[in-house]
Image (tube, rainbow, N blue to C red; front, side, top):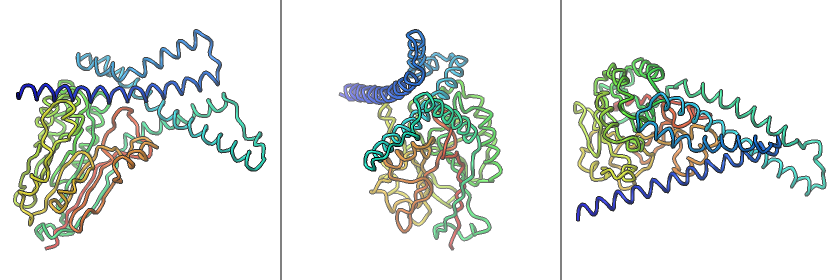
Length: 398
């Protein structure tokens, strides 16, 4: 019977992943079709040219899947080339799509206003080719800007007062927690960027370092050399992490092994007391179920057993607040959304999660902080959502 349950779980997880991938490639392919239509209208492609462009766009649509297939076979040189080409292109196409769509909407509005006001906005009309070139230039400019914005990690600072910490952690000597989130170490985020991040963490002189999921986004064997960079960090109260969805996507065993060798204690439905000063708890990301991996997500049961007189820090990858857990933790740290990463995707993220980036007060004694993330997923760029390290300073109120 147990075998049947496991088989059903695996089948259900497989079906969910297939459905998600189908939706992604349908939307991504639709973007390429829209861009192709714009290119055809602007340039009037001949048969051979049209077929060549269509073949390129079909390859780019499928390239993320091809990169994943190559990575499973550890062909890292090809993975590196495919990832950079495919994901830079993804960012450019995403930006081109939204800019072109904005021009189309403005054109329709102008036509509507002209009809209502009996006004002929002929002087404001642009040819398909001029709009195409303008869109391409804007998208290229935004792509270049977004690439460099993603390389500059900002430090966001928040300070909270609490009666649940010893008075020794006063305004001049707060308990300092540094949060990293969504680093996505892999073929696009490697040793060079991680060195910058580690140097910034060292400069903050944290008492505690936490990772709120999606630390890795590549196969563990290709990331082995990065563990020593994390091993250079020795905060007083240690380093703790929870799983994100990508830990399960790339393989939970490999991801957890990497995280442990980097010096992090992974909390999977577990809690730990830090020198009797505060309690830290963490739960798995539910995405593990999609991959048929057992996960521990019952935070109410976990938090209910913890001492309420001590400050409780909850690590949870997705910024979803369990109403049954309200009042059982003092601060929840999350990530996952990347702040949208590339405008205007942040608007869609806010609709989906109903939680803004930054600090939100949940109850008189509880808060949620949502990080924009420290790295990038997919396109190695950010636009309107710069990467961050978060420094949380807890001040004891006696």
